[in-house]
Image (tube, one colour):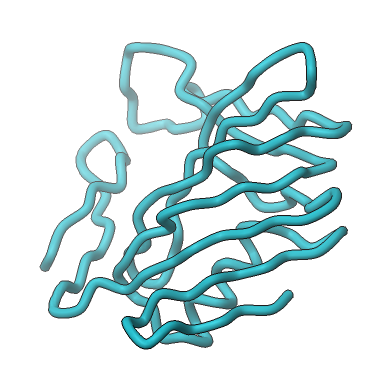
Length: 144
């Protein structure tokens, strides 16, 4: 992994074969002091694509009943990844294509680069966001 900081605070990240996306971006956030910000762009090829998605319309406090977690193996081309960083934790969604199917969802740990990944992150100055669970356990952005 390498990361490069621009004068305006934007950080460009390169990940190489076998490196994990989410875990690496957390490390970059920590190294550059990004507590509140965004992952603006991301492209990559991955060999393991773990995601989860909400699989029902009824919201209950028990999150295990409402989400489905899937790990796709093989060569996946990632054409879109982005999301908000709050409390130094990226909340990212990802879209991938393997030549036959397109999948999308909330990125989980263990998504490993196959060939190369490139990402841009930025910090939001003057804003401190956190995620606070509501009555259904949904972590919502607040500035408290």
